[in-house]
Image (cartoon, rainbow, N blue to C red; front, top):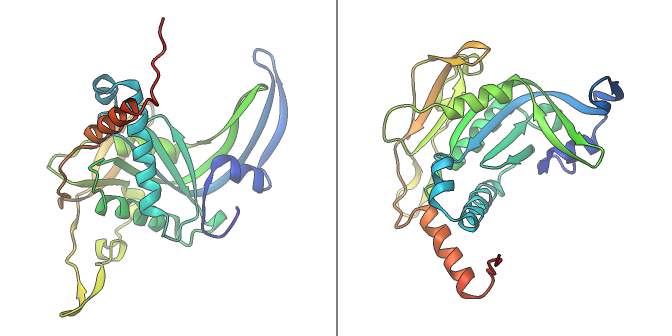
Length: 267
């Protein structure tokens, strides 16, 4: 990777490390295949925009484009001052982060939790992303055709993290992180989410109370893979906001259009 603590695309990882597999295969049906990948152990943090299908119907396409860029920009803005080494991958309404000791993480799972916590505690716009975390072995690799290859991440942890993010626990929570029970392994909530401390001009050192709650382990069904135990970590402290992200996206689009930067094609 470029430095010990950076954000990089999956392609950066593949181009900067010795690959686990690098071979040409001649398949009977698919023809010549270039198989290039790097296998690593780590933790996958999977985020998705909730209600994306509804947003796609509700917003104009250009408004949705603005919304998604707002979402990605907010993620980077919140995490840019933190010391993370992470490989990320965007796909439509989802954002995947991979943390691994192979490229700088001291504890990949705790790094993933810390990143999720920062987003959950600083969601002033009100995106309320669905977040799932799972750990294990993944492969970062290139897929595509001879004309164009893209880098992606594959493996059971990605599927588990996506399944965790897709769950909908009850309650009016402000932020929710769902993790596999296998990875949580009886960890202490206060150790994983230590109370924040700051210096108050009059009160001195102040420790904030714990705002996260740990749910009981529960079983979920994974299509084709049986069942898995997961836990929800939630907080209920909502940011006061006067407009939703979709309202802000509409306002930005209205401004762009009024300035003449939107030229609808005529057919």
